[in-house]
Length: 208
Image (cartoon, rainbow, N blue to C red; front, side, top):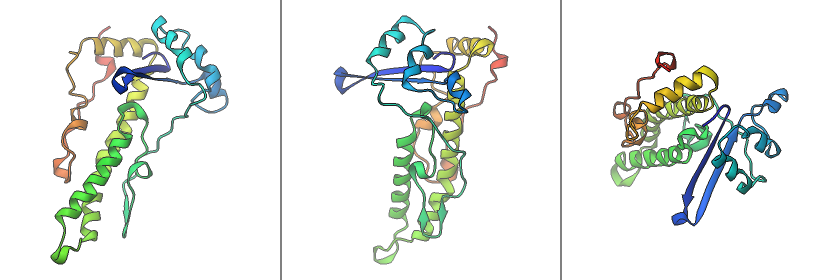
């Protein structure tokens, strides 16, 4: 993580393939009233990073690049017999790695309620299924979309805010997952089953 940028890499296929992703905000793009830069700005954007990160940049496929967008959460996913799911309902930024997972969860919640709400002869009460889906999924995905947005801002801090963030992270145990436990428990089928979120921490309260 660095000011206005971060770099991710991890092994795939048993270590036979290395996936690398470089994300940065571009000052030049701001002049174009955009946030994200182009492949030809990549080296400049990471010029202040460590040698390890700079060494990975030449191995990136620069012809593959994506601008990053999300959308404010919407509260209504169901209209009559129509229902949204996946990115149509909750397109997130990638910082929590939950985009595909939320879509899978949407489908599972629909299927599980359909299984539970079969009536005589095997007919599904789709009105009840969609009502149950609407009751539980928008709130969970609202949390994910807004938290992912906040985490992206947290990763790209600079100045004194960056120092506060780094001090906070250094003080935490490496196996402390309390800020994301709410993501990785069982998928809620009913609103009362939704896990409680973490308690936010003000960076201003952290000593540096």
